[in-house]
Length: 219
Image (cartoon, rainbow, N blue to C red; front, top):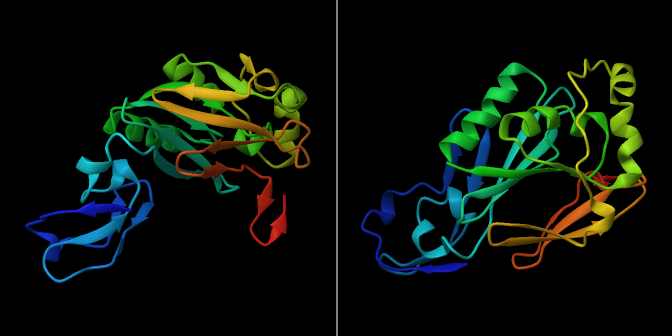
């Protein structure tokens, strides 16, 4: 939460913002006091009310839902403009374009394709990301066999896998991922796959859990 001072058009500001064309919704919670002062909780980069006072204190999170499995791809960035792309699942040319347009519009600089695990629905767009922005692909080594067999196991689910990426960073050897001014802790959570990982941002206490848990179900 951040204290917001004078805001000349505070009465007319909506409580929900939509990022055009990619289906991202951000909600603000207001506890208004008399006069033009209130408190607001928000994600920094997508808050048009209090960006100026949180610019250097929070990471920005965008969730893009891709492919027939409705897989969640996350773009995580900070005030430096550097970002990582977690579980790139973009599958079609249209989904590739949405990801590129988002990165371009926000003037971000991808530095890594980062995966929680190697299942094909989380892997479909990784080669596109590594080729488009010339960045390494990071995965825990126990899931290499899933990458290597993605063409075969993708067919079981009806996916035509365009290409399989090369793992450049084995996260079994990394306790942290650093980019810009941000550090993500790497947590091994085997079960869904042998090499499954979660990524934890301790400052805001945000966990990117991949398929460790499903809604109302185990992972």
